[in-house]
Length: 496
Image (cartoon, rainbow, N blue to C red):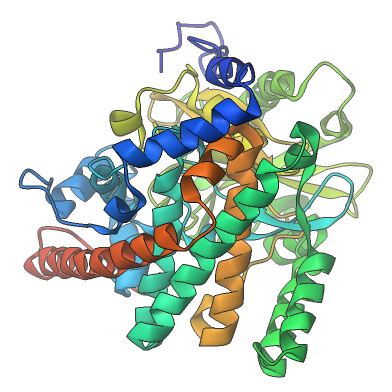
């Protein structure tokens, strides 16, 4: 990332472009024949046998997990770091959700086939879900790209698979059931990658899972008695609920008239209106003019054609706390209005720091981390938000940071992980595994990956072994983290 030059408008600065074309390796790959790509995958088995993926042993110089968390905290809002730690402290599973840097460091020492894809970078099971497409269809896909970067496809697979092992422990599943759930996720990844390998380029690019197709799959599982009717109803409720999560619902829940003007309602520390956090006498004392200039800069990242954003006017902004791993990074929501109060739009402006993968997989080719996130999302998702863009902002503290922008809620839905039973978890693992394969197949060499994986379950078994061992490591790391909180080394605020 490069620093923004000084400007007469200090809150608005934008640098776009890439250091080198990110598509260069894919372009070169396209000139290989299908047979050459198959041979590439088979040859990779010599350098990295599939059985080698089963091993997990921490290397002697493994960084201390608590030290890595402290390193991350240095770039976050200090008063919010205790809330992040408090959310991670709930269980080994919530700790794992916030430990993307720790696992990236660990994965860097594991075997890889040498085939690069666009990685999600944090592909745990809670980062998949439902959302609306511009065509007003609901699809299931990956929904978090803060860490996206090109890298070894195995890293995403292991991050996803291990999340199911750890979630299974949290839910009290037996070791045999946990292994079966993990292997279901990896087997589905392998099967879907083989299907993608047989597709034409456009078919692989357009492949997606609509909510209707997901519900049909759930009902089929009920008929063959692999999923209970109760769990099927839970899936159907998740889909129905997602349809209600839109801008109008957020407006009803989060906005109110204050002194005759519409405002986002304060709910600290989760939501804090911008006027409550600005310093009197600073350039942000009257934030509206600066935010309008920022919106004009952001608009340029949405393309040259007419865009619906032009029909909305800025009304109000607030800080919004999000997630587990993201707590402490800077995130805001903007209330916009179209023709009247019945036509609201909420935008989320979320800080984009360097991906946790960069120190292990190489620096991003993008000079702007917001653009890195947006470009990675467009490569991996079957359909993307039409409001997806990026901006560089000189903030309240005078520091310039990168952000990406998207709709705050647009038919967003997620599975209720806390109530999953083994059959439902198995089905969800299959859906997530297939979804990750679709995302990797869009830009990665799907033919080489499928060739490397083969049609047997050698890779599935190896990853299941890895996940059991890594879940043990995660529990040890969680214990070290909890001890650091207990000793006072790490401040934690629970219940927020």
